Length: 199
Length: 94
Image (cartoon, rainbow over all chains, first blue to last red; front, side):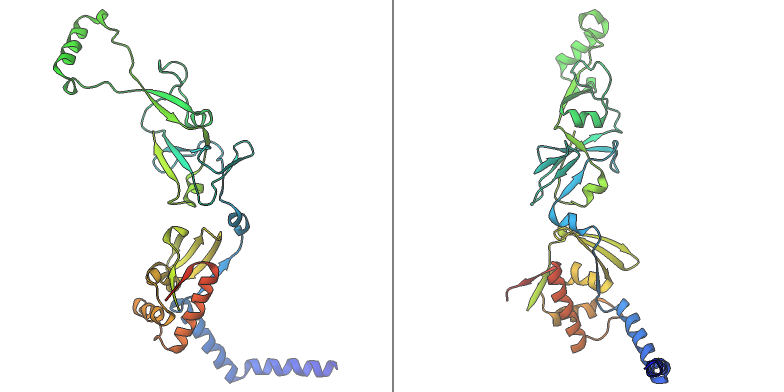
């Protein structure tokens, strides 16, 4: 029995090394090499598919990541289908529904939670987690932007400072719906299906 | 029997030297495809097409593609059926 098995093995080896077999192998290699170039092929990778198939989940990002333009990306928790784990994960639903507020971090504006612009400026993460209306100091208009009466008032103020408090800041308010910061990488997998707004 | 690609926003593509990885959002599956398959999904099957026309279009697009003989068309047909199974293409009524 063992001798028969050895003989079979020897036959297989001999067949594999015969000139005809070598030619077939070379032909096969050529075909495979050609296939890699010209014949359409597909190979399916399975890792990580199960979760994505059942839901459109996105997690809150650690820290305060920014996108390529320097914006914090605040996912509005009222725009998603479901909020899990106290806002650590969001299900965007099917079809996907989500709104992201871009909070600029590089344009020099400082945001406050009051129109008097007092207290400590808030970062994007805190604004996003608290939600609400936030205020920043608006740039004053240039004299050339003003009408004749306003220009006259401005000139009068410059000569009579006590007439108007010249240090008074003009605040502009912006709304940031409450939610959580998410990363640009995570949002990229939902490309084209997220509504963005920038404050 | 004709097929067309799924809508482009269902795909996320990455390319490295004419080799492609595509993430299909509705299924959550990631596929590795060569340049010819990428051409099918991104360019050729934008318009509904049967396997023979798709194989001709593919041969026309790819300089080193084999002649679109019956074997090649059969291979493309089998691949389109596989694409349909994966949700990458949809069958279009005649």
